[in-house]
Length: 307
Image (cartoon, rainbow, N blue to C red; front, side, top):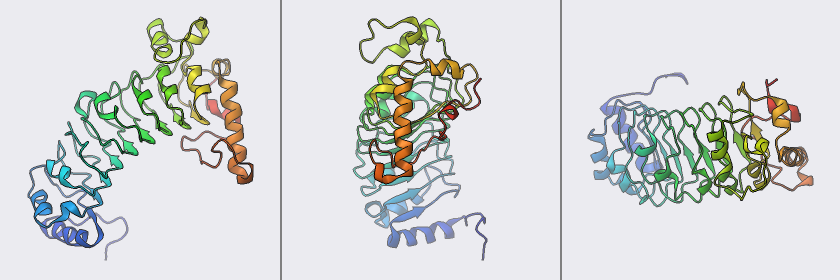
């Protein structure tokens, strides 16, 4: 009997066994099976009637380069794992009526290669791809999306994320961001925002400052200090944000962040959330939610190792 860390069984016999098991469970694990998008297994899924039965499918670790079109016929599929598949482009997946979770991380996608996604999608993992900008075509209709992971890309702007009006958790770690676009304040449900290891600056260049200030509320009357704020005050004050990670931005100092307009509003909201998480009876402000971006209790830990 193999140990818990044993490599998965491979080959036609293993795949056949997985297909048989999926007929009973609705879950099919085809990860790390050396499959291609042209492999015969996709035809077998259709011929065995699994297209209408599968609820969860894992095809991670196969050299597919693109998603097999047969996946679009899986009308009951709710969860799709397609990590580490060298995927370079996706098809229009909007006709998939039940898909709510899509993990398509650690692939080779660029912004113009992510086609439309199902509007009911709730959780989307796009980390460790090659996005330099927000993939608008893929995200524009995701009005029910609550969790988005875009960490480990090459993002230089967040313009366009404001359309994700149900977003609660947003991970933007390990990108090339100098600041956020103010349209993110339209994500009024946003609670958890992670910006670790970017290039956030306390004093943005003119072009970046203008982009940061655009897309939000009328900013008439704001001073230059406000326009150079890496996290615009609209985001700090106009959302439910209670969890913010800024570690690993060497050009951002705690002194600068402490002077941001709206930072005191955010810190007070975070204190209320932390009190609520320690004592559910206090309630209010969604305080029972556990942080997902690693902000510690002491408010100065917001700034991590910054000087």
